[in-house]
Amino acid sequence: MLITTAIDYTNGAPHIGHAYEKVLADVLARYERVLGAEVFYLTGVDQHGQKVQQTAEKEGINPATFAAKKTKLFLNLWKKLGLQYDGWAATTDERHKACVQAILQDLFDRGQIYKKQYKGYYSVRQEQFITDKERGEDGEFGAEWGQVEERDEENYYFKLTEHSDWLKNYVSSTEDCVVPSFRRNELIGALDRAGEQDLCISRPKERLRWGIELPFDTAFVTYVWFDALINYISFAGYKAVADSGLPDFSKLWPQPGGNTARPLHIIGKDILVPAHGVYWPCMLHAIGFTDEQIPQILVHGWWNISGEKMSKSLGNVVDPDELADKFGVDALRYYLVRDITIGRDSDFDLERLVMLYNQELANELGNLCNRALNMTGRFCNSTVTTNHEPTPTDLELRESLVNATAAYRTAMDAYDTAAALKAINAHVSHCNAYTEQNAPWALAKDPEQKQRLETVLAHLVESLAQLTLLLSPFLPEPAARLANQLRLDSLLDMKLDQLEWGLIPDGHQTGKPKPVFPRIVIEEE
Image (cartoon, rainbow, N blue to C red; front, side, top):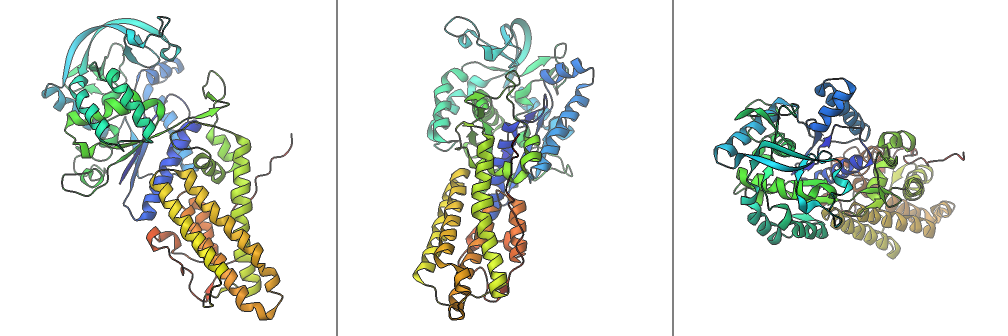
């Protein structure tokens, strides 16, 4: 399975929205691996474009040097956050350039790209031509377009309009082409306007030199659509030459008669229309991709501050690098996929980050870890005994685990990470209530209750082991530490279908517990 994310523009440092999207993709990729799927997680950076060139010129450095410096910020952050991606896309890569130029030449040869003169309005901020339809009720272009100029220049255009009817039919007939469903409805509502004119895909070198040359006219460079968007196939091995170091495209992308899953493409809501929901599928269709080969698009919302979008001008941008240093990578990863409903916006709240981590991980799960392993060590010489008959209370705990695992799978299959974590927490709460009800510390004082003590602790250790595997896509480092303390070295190599009661064998020796989720303590200023 191929999982791709939007590639990040190297015009500035990564912010919390970048971190959310990449962590979300990492969690989903790791989950697919736990299911047993072969996964290729592709992410990267968009290094070309007018904004990069302009900012580099202001700093008095070469655009390539500027882009490389910003790229390093993203690479360092992704390493810190523990992203396990398989492919890295950088649009200055020569292999990408070769793929882009091959596609452009093929489309030009087939009459899908043509040259014409255009006079009209151009948004400097959005780097695209706009029409009077983008004006507001007051007759003015909105603030989102920034500086708008009139331009009269010759450029190359992609025949987007030839594919607009196909796109309408595809989106209307393919219910899961965009998820969540309300985001698909937004795309359907925008299709009439978004695909009614052909797409300008070039910029003259006299205005923009930082880009990939058109193979059929070296006086122009290709603009973002036929550069950045192509990365999702170029770095997956499309048109790659032998020994390129790129993957086998036929194994990542659905082929006729094959059983490869559709790629999952993860983006933010602001780039669904028109770039990724209109331009990209039409480009693929023009290249020759079938309906079955068009990626599924997962659209996430924004992290806001007090209901307002984060922006440099408002000074409310959250730096994920600083957050990871201050609160820890585990707390940040957990919060990003726990406190937001997929597809919706959410307000970023540091108090909730600390509260959710302390309550659900440090207190609830941490308490279960400590009790299961510590009391097994103290009262049972670290030996798990599983051969006693379970009581109705024990069977209820087992049923809770089965239900939690089923709810977890349903949620993750729907990309609902928050619901999946709630399912884990529900069984953790059941385990802690079960511990209070059975009071192993009291049972340990009565020799006649030895079997009951062993059974209770065995149920806690078994639950902890299975929860560790469920938690591993979200928090891989803590999961590895838990597996080590459980002395189950192969636990994280297991697949979800292998989870059934009896994971812990009779006589298994557990290790000593060490805090996996230390509480976050905020000192009063």
